[in-house]
Image (cartoon, helix red, strand yellow):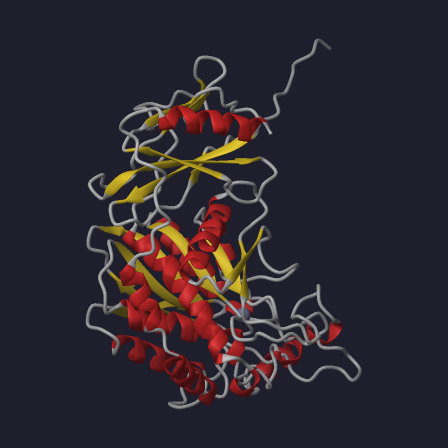
Amino acid sequence: MNLSRSLTAIAASISLTAGFAPAQDKAVHPKIQEMMKQVSEVRIKAVLQKLESFGTRHTMSNADDPVHGVGAARTWILNEMKSYSPKLEVRFEKFRVKKQGLRIFKDVDLYNVIAYLPGKKMPETVVVVSAHYDSLNLGTRPAGAAAGPGTEAGAPGNTTANMTLADFEKNAELPAPGVCDDGSGTAAVMELARVMSQYEFDKTLAFYVFAGEEQGLIGSGLQAAKASKEGQAIEAVLNNDIIGTDVSGNGRMGNGSVSVYSDETMDSVSQQLSRYVREIGERYLPSMKINTVFMGDRLGRGGDQTPFQWEGFAAVRVSTPNEMYANQHHATDTLANMSVPYTARVAQVNLAVAASLALGPKPPAVMPAPPASGSGRRPTPMIARGGGYDAVLRWRAAGPEEGIKGYAIVMRATTSPYWEQEVYVGKVNTYTLKDVSIDDAKFGVKAIGVNGTESLVTSYAFPPRQKVEIETIQ
Ligand SMILES: [Zn+2]
């Protein structure tokens, strides 16, 4: 109530102030719409057919056969991506992984396939779309065991809890078509690489397909750690895993929604990214409902977004809310058992979001510029009680300013999942919200590009107060 009353007051005061533009339009970029139209079900289906034809893409499978197994699959993906455009820089990222645990039962050379479309204005800033191309067959379920998701959180028939080393070795060569998990994500990433490499973007677009997801997120884990060590500026990771079914095993169905998992930390960068996916995804594909889920993944399960979060990057998992457990990690995860039109729709959501980010400004910085020498105090975001009862927000441009039209402040109640209020404040670096309390609402700021695109929101997220040890007299 306080917030909305205050905002009415702000709106009134803004309308009396000369020089402010009206709240910016929710712009739809024609070039992005044009790209979305080019996402082809026919092309996605052809990729899925090919991926299925390798029999298995298990990371530990025989890599020497020219037409079967993980080696043939990754070589095909590499060459296919190379064929899309000379502007696309495609290569293997190879990691030599030591034998460890049961799932990595021998030393293995792991290959992620990565492709870069270098940005024209901010090439150092990277927007990633990813998936995993490896597959898994967990073998025959014990008699009577129900089908369930592949972890301890699911039904017993699809867990690795009772498996022996011999089981793991045998499973590596079982048929594992993996068309939904995660051929669907791989085909979407490849289709985006094909379509988007015909265009130019301000930021660099990266298309990653990982190996080793089924061995414990090892391909993405190594890739994320490398990015962090090299100081790569990854702005966002859209990880697609299981985007190929729109009918659940219990009969629930619908191709009009997709889930976006982030994490459970209020106002984390990954939650901001998930809000952005919802806002932009539904703007460009209004027939799709984006479910933001403030969890790291489906309960007790995992995906390749998590290692990027460990390194501090904004990363989300895009996944169907209608999984078919009976086919997961089994020989029945085939093209016949999935929905290509659904994968194409989710690919379009990814395209709208990745293109908006890559054509848009960098999110503003809300932390003060680091001092020459550390003051010893932890920095806090630049938000303050101006004259006592006003909200005074400051920010800095994090990238080139010429592409920025202005900034918008966003606000919401602390209990609200989505930004509720938006005030376009023009091309300034500070703004006072008169009579707005900073004590009972969340605040953020985003940059609006001259082309109508918008940046991710940077939240004024305050670090939690830390425990202080109090000395007492013994
Ligand atoms: Zn998967």
